[in-house]
Length: 114
Length: 225
Ligand SMILES: Nc1nc2c(ncn2[C@@H]2O[C@H](COP(=O)(O)OP(=O)(O)OP(=O)(O)O)[C@@H](O)[C@H]2O)c(=O)[nH]1
Ligand SMILES: [Mg+2]
Ligand SMILES: [Zn+2]
Ligand SMILES: [Zn+2]
Image 1 (cartoon, each protein chain N blue to C red):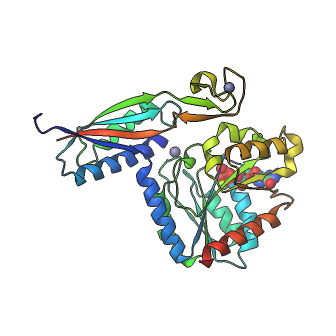
Image 2: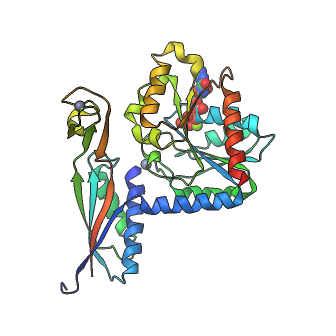
Image 3: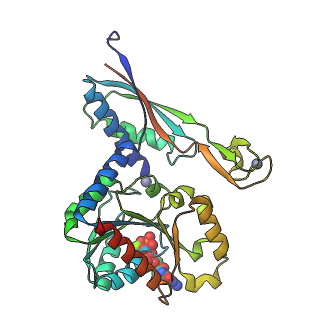
């Protein structure tokens, strides 16, 4: 299962930062997830709930998942458009010479700590 | 509660720690002179068959080992051992659909990686998430079989962007499928102008010479400096 692997990387990262900052506990975590990333939000939440019980500082940590819209850029006409609506084909000029600008990332934004 | 609550900004990719571990592993492999190859593809594209063809050519010149990352079986590890005679182990991915640098390093320790010239890692069959997790390999290979269609580089851009070599496999069977070779090369180039592309057949042996030469050069270059 993919989400569990990503969750374990996120937890490792957060716990490292928390320890560096002499944190007692992590209250919440905000994670930005691109619309076309490989993460399924519901699965991710389940994996997070399961995994946090096995951590030192994140036992009570609340997870805020922010979904980030995916945007594609057309190299031929310069249009930017919604990836999930139109895919690889530019809705303005029909070109397939396009690439994803945002939407595939999984970013740890911030944590609230005590 | 409340008065000593504060926010720490991270603004960091979830894959950052894995990337750092992977870089550290690559550096270690460089020092030890071990060439680690990460082989990725869809299920059944020909990872095990291609490794078998290649290893049978390389094994007289190099000490080779194989790590097989199957979700739940050891079929491939046994097949490699039987058909090439080289050391092969099964990595337990614990149901995970990809390998990360930590799992790879654990596998290398188990096989005593530093006593080999080349270690091949057969990643889990899937074109999506192995692309996101750098294993620490010195060379990333994607195998694309003619039965999958020439449009795969468009559908799975990341894995084609990140690889060093694309092997087009099962070219003996190309007539049975709608696979346009030039179109496929063009689609790969759109994602990755620098990747080497080699077409092979594990059935007829076509292209295996070119593949062997490519690997010989890459291994020697890695061990040189
Ligand atoms: N005709 C033809 N068949 C091939 C070729 N390479 C592999 N095959 C066949 O394709 C099937 C799958 O090959 P494998 O090498 O097991 O593929 P794999 O990618 O390791 O498969 P998984 O580990 O299950 O993901 C087998 O039946 C092979 O005999 C080839 O070049 N030509
Ligand atoms: Mg296999
Ligand atoms: Zn995965
Ligand atoms: Zn356009």
